[in-house]
Image (cartoon, rainbow, N blue to C red; front, side):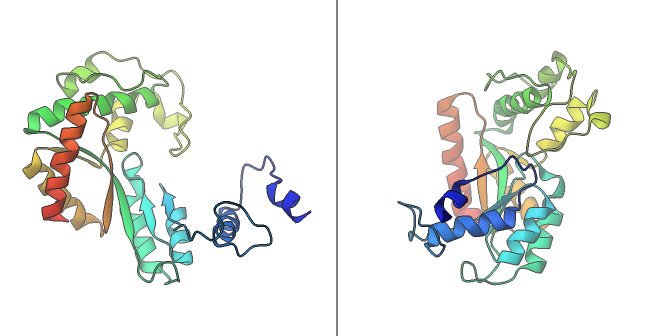
Length: 235
Protein backbone atom coordinates (compact mmCIF):
# COMPACT_ATOMS: atom_id res chain seq x y z
CA UNK A 1 0.00 0.00 0.00
CA UNK A 2 2.83 2.40 0.78
CA UNK A 3 4.40 1.76 -2.61
CA UNK A 4 1.06 2.20 -4.38
CA UNK A 5 0.57 5.52 -2.62
CA UNK A 6 4.08 6.64 -3.53
CA UNK A 7 3.60 6.10 -7.25
CA UNK A 8 0.09 7.57 -7.37
CA UNK A 9 0.02 11.01 -9.00
CA UNK A 10 -2.75 13.51 -9.72
CA UNK A 11 -3.34 16.23 -12.27
CA UNK A 12 -2.68 18.94 -9.70
CA UNK A 13 -1.22 21.93 -11.53
CA UNK A 14 0.10 23.41 -8.28
CA UNK A 15 2.30 20.74 -6.70
CA UNK A 16 4.07 21.23 -3.40
CA UNK A 17 7.60 21.44 -4.75
CA UNK A 18 9.22 21.40 -1.33
CA UNK A 19 7.31 18.26 -0.38
CA UNK A 20 8.16 16.62 -3.71
CA UNK A 21 11.83 17.44 -3.22
CA UNK A 22 11.76 15.91 0.28
CA UNK A 23 10.21 12.76 -1.16
CA UNK A 24 12.85 12.56 -3.91
CA UNK A 25 15.67 13.03 -1.40
CA UNK A 26 14.29 10.19 0.73
CA UNK A 27 14.43 7.89 -2.29
CA UNK A 28 18.02 8.89 -3.05
CA UNK A 29 19.14 8.58 0.58
CA UNK A 30 17.08 5.44 1.25
CA UNK A 31 15.49 7.03 4.31
CA UNK A 32 11.82 6.84 3.34
CA UNK A 33 9.17 4.17 3.76
CA UNK A 34 9.59 3.01 0.16
CA UNK A 35 12.87 1.90 -1.41
CA UNK A 36 13.60 2.93 -5.02
CA UNK A 37 16.21 0.87 -6.82
CA UNK A 38 18.86 1.21 -8.16
CA UNK A 39 19.38 4.77 -6.90
CA UNK A 40 18.74 4.40 -3.19
CA UNK A 41 21.76 5.00 -1.02
CA UNK A 42 23.92 6.49 -3.77
CA UNK A 43 24.02 9.93 -2.13
CA UNK A 44 23.30 11.78 -5.35
CA UNK A 45 23.76 15.53 -4.76
CA UNK A 46 20.66 17.70 -5.12
CA UNK A 47 20.67 21.19 -6.65
CA UNK A 48 17.82 23.65 -6.99
CA UNK A 49 17.43 25.10 -10.49
CA UNK A 50 15.31 28.19 -10.85
CA UNK A 51 14.41 31.16 -13.00
CA UNK A 52 12.51 33.16 -10.37
CA UNK A 53 12.84 34.25 -6.76
CA UNK A 54 10.64 31.40 -5.46
CA UNK A 55 13.40 28.89 -6.08
CA UNK A 56 15.92 31.14 -4.34
CA UNK A 57 13.91 31.15 -1.12
CA UNK A 58 13.56 27.36 -1.21
CA UNK A 59 17.26 26.70 -1.94
CA UNK A 60 18.24 29.03 0.92
CA UNK A 61 15.78 27.44 3.33
CA UNK A 62 16.92 23.89 2.57
CA UNK A 63 20.61 24.75 2.44
CA UNK A 64 21.12 23.46 -1.09
CA UNK A 65 23.32 24.73 -3.91
CA UNK A 66 21.44 27.03 -6.28
CA UNK A 67 21.59 27.24 -10.07
CA UNK A 68 19.91 30.22 -11.72
CA UNK A 69 18.84 30.10 -15.38
CA UNK A 70 20.10 33.52 -16.45
CA UNK A 71 20.76 32.18 -19.96
CA UNK A 72 17.09 32.61 -20.85
CA UNK A 73 15.42 34.30 -17.84
CA UNK A 74 17.79 36.92 -16.44
CA UNK A 75 15.15 39.39 -15.24
CA UNK A 76 15.35 38.34 -11.56
CA UNK A 77 18.98 37.20 -11.57
CA UNK A 78 20.43 39.71 -9.12
CA UNK A 79 17.44 39.64 -6.79
CA UNK A 80 17.32 35.84 -6.71
CA UNK A 81 21.03 35.45 -5.95
CA UNK A 82 20.80 38.10 -3.22
CA UNK A 83 17.78 36.38 -1.64
CA UNK A 84 19.56 33.03 -1.71
CA UNK A 85 22.80 34.27 -0.18
CA UNK A 86 21.13 36.46 2.46
CA UNK A 87 18.74 33.72 3.59
CA UNK A 88 20.99 30.68 3.27
CA UNK A 89 20.77 28.17 6.12
CA UNK A 90 23.71 25.73 6.29
CA UNK A 91 22.85 22.06 5.94
CA UNK A 92 24.53 18.71 5.75
CA UNK A 93 24.45 19.02 1.97
CA UNK A 94 25.99 22.48 1.80
CA UNK A 95 27.75 24.40 4.56
CA UNK A 96 27.95 27.67 2.61
CA UNK A 97 25.88 29.15 -0.22
CA UNK A 98 26.94 28.00 -3.67
CA UNK A 99 25.68 29.71 -6.82
CA UNK A 100 25.85 28.40 -10.37
CA UNK A 101 24.82 30.87 -13.05
CA UNK A 102 23.60 29.78 -16.47
CA UNK A 103 25.04 32.06 -19.17
CA UNK A 104 25.18 32.13 -22.95
CA UNK A 105 28.81 31.95 -24.04
CA UNK A 106 30.08 32.28 -27.60
CA UNK A 107 33.77 32.83 -28.31
CA UNK A 108 35.82 33.16 -31.48
CA UNK A 109 39.13 34.67 -32.54
CA UNK A 110 37.49 38.06 -33.13
CA UNK A 111 34.52 39.92 -31.68
CA UNK A 112 33.03 40.18 -35.15
CA UNK A 113 33.10 36.43 -35.75
CA UNK A 114 31.65 35.70 -32.31
CA UNK A 115 28.81 38.15 -32.96
CA UNK A 116 28.13 36.48 -36.30
CA UNK A 117 28.01 33.02 -34.69
CA UNK A 118 25.69 34.32 -31.98
CA UNK A 119 22.93 35.08 -34.51
CA UNK A 120 22.05 31.35 -34.49
CA UNK A 121 21.24 31.70 -30.81
CA UNK A 122 19.23 34.84 -31.52
CA UNK A 123 17.26 32.98 -34.19
CA UNK A 124 16.55 30.13 -31.77
CA UNK A 125 15.09 32.44 -29.13
CA UNK A 126 13.16 34.33 -31.79
CA UNK A 127 11.71 30.98 -32.88
CA UNK A 128 10.47 30.39 -29.34
CA UNK A 129 8.98 33.86 -29.18
CA UNK A 130 7.21 33.54 -32.53
CA UNK A 131 6.10 29.92 -31.95
CA UNK A 132 8.28 28.52 -34.74
CA UNK A 133 10.20 25.23 -34.37
CA UNK A 134 12.92 25.53 -36.99
CA UNK A 135 15.71 24.07 -34.88
CA UNK A 136 19.20 25.53 -34.78
CA UNK A 137 19.70 27.63 -37.90
CA UNK A 138 22.88 28.77 -39.73
CA UNK A 139 24.15 32.17 -38.61
CA UNK A 140 23.32 35.41 -40.35
CA UNK A 141 25.98 37.93 -41.28
CA UNK A 142 24.76 40.34 -38.61
CA UNK A 143 22.08 40.87 -35.95
CA UNK A 144 20.48 43.45 -38.20
CA UNK A 145 19.85 40.73 -40.77
CA UNK A 146 18.01 38.66 -38.18
CA UNK A 147 15.47 41.44 -37.70
CA UNK A 148 15.26 42.41 -41.35
CA UNK A 149 12.89 39.58 -42.23
CA UNK A 150 11.12 37.58 -39.57
CA UNK A 151 7.59 36.36 -38.92
CA UNK A 152 5.95 38.41 -36.21
CA UNK A 153 4.18 36.59 -33.41
CA UNK A 154 0.43 36.22 -33.79
CA UNK A 155 -0.15 34.63 -30.42
CA UNK A 156 1.57 34.30 -27.07
CA UNK A 157 3.78 31.18 -27.08
CA UNK A 158 3.85 28.52 -24.41
CA UNK A 159 7.34 28.42 -22.90
CA UNK A 160 7.09 26.94 -19.43
CA UNK A 161 10.07 28.60 -17.69
CA UNK A 162 9.00 32.10 -18.78
CA UNK A 163 5.48 33.45 -18.32
CA UNK A 164 4.66 35.76 -21.23
CA UNK A 165 2.05 38.48 -20.67
CA UNK A 166 -0.28 38.65 -23.69
CA UNK A 167 -0.85 42.39 -23.25
CA UNK A 168 2.86 43.10 -23.33
CA UNK A 169 3.94 40.50 -25.86
CA UNK A 170 2.54 41.00 -29.35
CA UNK A 171 4.61 43.53 -31.28
CA UNK A 172 7.48 43.46 -28.77
CA UNK A 173 9.31 40.42 -30.10
CA UNK A 174 12.66 42.15 -30.48
CA UNK A 175 12.57 43.65 -26.99
CA UNK A 176 11.59 40.31 -25.46
CA UNK A 177 14.35 38.42 -27.30
CA UNK A 178 16.88 41.01 -26.12
CA UNK A 179 15.61 40.66 -22.55
CA UNK A 180 15.86 36.86 -22.66
CA UNK A 181 19.42 36.93 -24.06
CA UNK A 182 20.72 39.76 -21.88
CA UNK A 183 23.21 37.52 -20.04
CA UNK A 184 25.23 36.57 -23.11
CA UNK A 185 29.01 36.79 -23.10
CA UNK A 186 30.13 37.09 -26.71
CA UNK A 187 33.50 37.93 -28.21
CA UNK A 188 37.15 37.03 -28.39
CA UNK A 189 38.93 35.77 -25.27
CA UNK A 190 39.81 39.25 -24.05
CA UNK A 191 36.29 40.58 -24.57
CA UNK A 192 34.74 37.53 -22.94
CA UNK A 193 36.99 37.90 -19.88
CA UNK A 194 36.03 41.56 -19.52
CA UNK A 195 32.32 40.74 -19.79
CA UNK A 196 32.70 37.96 -17.22
CA UNK A 197 34.39 40.36 -14.80
CA UNK A 198 31.48 42.80 -15.19
CA UNK A 199 29.00 40.01 -14.54
CA UNK A 200 30.85 38.95 -11.39
CA UNK A 201 30.59 42.52 -10.12
CA UNK A 202 26.80 42.31 -10.45
CA UNK A 203 26.31 38.88 -8.84
CA UNK A 204 28.48 36.75 -6.56
CA UNK A 205 28.82 33.42 -8.34
CA UNK A 206 30.89 30.31 -7.71
CA UNK A 207 30.48 28.59 -11.06
CA UNK A 208 29.00 29.16 -14.50
CA UNK A 209 26.99 26.73 -16.58
CA UNK A 210 27.40 27.45 -20.26
CA UNK A 211 24.83 27.39 -23.05
CA UNK A 212 26.34 27.70 -26.54
CA UNK A 213 23.95 27.66 -29.48
CA UNK A 214 26.48 27.57 -32.33
CA UNK A 215 25.41 26.05 -35.65
CA UNK A 216 28.77 24.78 -36.87
CA UNK A 217 30.09 21.90 -34.75
CA UNK A 218 33.74 22.77 -35.23
CA UNK A 219 33.08 26.40 -34.33
CA UNK A 220 31.28 25.27 -31.19
CA UNK A 221 34.14 23.01 -30.14
CA UNK A 222 36.62 25.83 -30.78
CA UNK A 223 34.46 28.23 -28.77
CA UNK A 224 34.48 25.85 -25.81
CA UNK A 225 38.24 25.44 -26.10
CA UNK A 226 38.68 29.22 -25.94
CA UNK A 227 36.26 29.32 -23.01
CA UNK A 228 38.35 26.76 -21.15
CA UNK A 229 41.47 28.88 -21.65
CA UNK A 230 39.72 31.98 -20.33
CA UNK A 231 38.23 30.21 -17.31
CA UNK A 232 41.58 28.78 -16.23
CA UNK A 233 42.88 32.33 -15.90
CA UNK A 234 39.80 34.20 -14.72
CA UNK A 235 37.77 31.96 -12.42
